[in-house]
Image 1 (tube, helix red, strand yellow):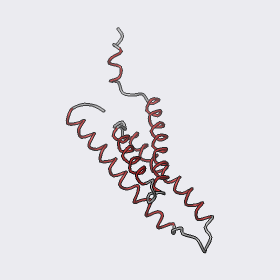
Image 2 (cartoon, helix red, strand yellow):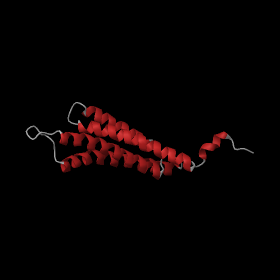
Image 3 (cartoon, one colour):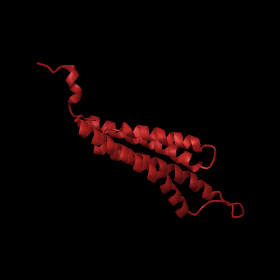
Image 4 (cartoon, one colour):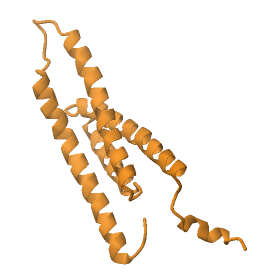
Length: 144
């Protein structure tokens, strides 16, 4: 006798589905991190409000990440990698075209410090959200 279709979602995903979910999480988080990095480069301009809205949207997306260690790890890695790639490309071009008289570029250590100042709160808040969601699911006895 076949199982009713309504209970099929309770089964654990197979390895193929897990790799698809992890790959999708990496791509989405990489894109989100890249856009966040691009907006963070212009944080002192009028784009600062867009940066704040994007940060809030990112935290809303973090709440929806499946509570599986591999997916959370892939999402966090994708976010940091996307952010880092954008910062490396933009700042490398800025340093390459910098003329000594009008050069306003910071040294790489300062740029790294600024990047960490933008990344650390997002990773901390998103991790706290995921932890809170796991705690609530455990308290309620439900699965995410």
